[in-house]
Length: 82
Image 1 (cartoon, rainbow, N blue to C red):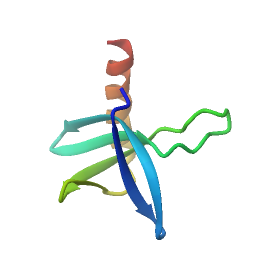
Image 2 (tube, one colour; image 1 turned 90 degrees about the vertical axis):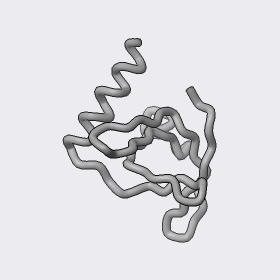
Image 3 (cartoon, rainbow, N blue to C red; image 1 turned 60 degrees about the vertical axis):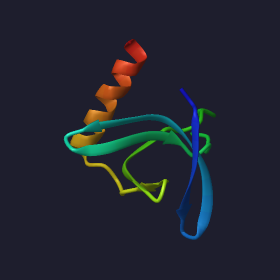
Image 4 (tube, helix red, strand yellow; image 1 turned 90 degrees about the horizontal axis):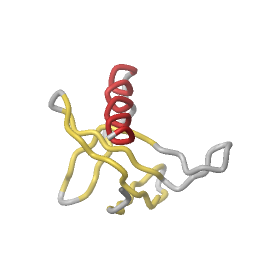
């Protein structure tokens, strides 16, 4: 499902990211993406955040709550299990 690239800035550093999934739930836009950093098992880590589009650019809106992570988990399960 990788099809859109975008960049984020963290502490003044530009990071190239790749989007896996976007969806809307409870009036919030969520994104699941990778920043191409490998986890302890050598796999690209997946990250999730709320986001907005600003001038055609993805702007991440901070860390998710536990309830919001549950929402993301359920959406990922739907995607994986069809």
